[in-house]
Image 1 (cartoon, rainbow, N blue to C red):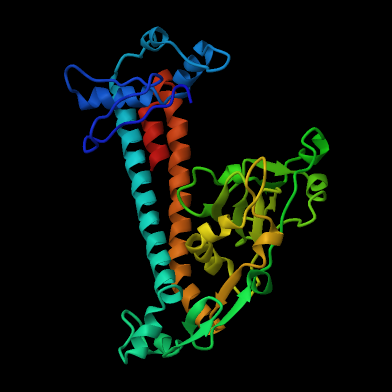
Image 2: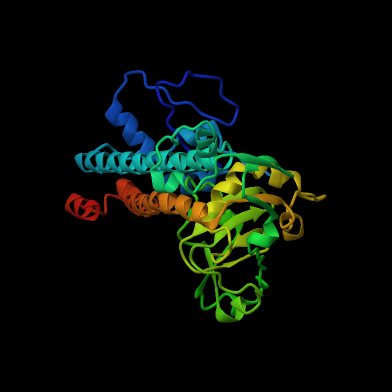
Length: 357
């Protein structure tokens, strides 16, 4: 995308650039000025400048001369203070994202330990106490294995098809040329585009909304909060749990709450088994996993007490992920509100500080 900008950490070795990339190096290092220029190049004013000078038919590009001709506003004390606030916002947002990545990794590791490696079962088989587990939880696991179509699995656990233990629904796209389907915009409606670029499996809002007439065109209707969304094409494998009621388009397989295997369990199961899911996809224009191909996939089903013990632990982690994601989104909105003011200077510093507070 023309006008995109990024800072390369000092710890990353310098490499070669493509012909459509510009690298800025300062003859006299000045961190304050470097940060200022970074935020100037992220401002909407600079993006508009790029869009106005982009040329080409097959490949749209901006010339080096036009890039160098962009007039950078003078570095004033107001702009210096605004940059400091933008830097702090980015720092806090990055910390929240890193925390979420850690929490998600902990939950995925627990899923793998219990339901892939069967660590508690192996420990009991060897007459050891399962690590990091209280006696009540340990008592939920058997002390041995038995043969199944999936190989050796814990005794008493069943192998069933996804269709037997998980409800799956699809969606649709009402006619985009019919205004009555979209206005007034009342009900959230999602496409896999909403999930692209997400750093946590949490969908807080959607880009588009439907009217009541548009919603009536989707047979699956409005799905409840807590529904697991998995993109089924272009590409396969985006995952998120909806934090609002919504309708979906045809690019999803959705798994609402209320099944034998809850969405939170299925989130980590899908993440663990995504390559196997993709292997069942087909298509000529693009690969797609249909509900018909998804439902017969065999899945190991633990007793309900084990599933409940897992979700009790992971729900606390996931709730924190959701709260962190809400905070990160609020910070991103604040950053986007401040960026135009960096150039225009229309917002005074006390107002900026009040917004940050």
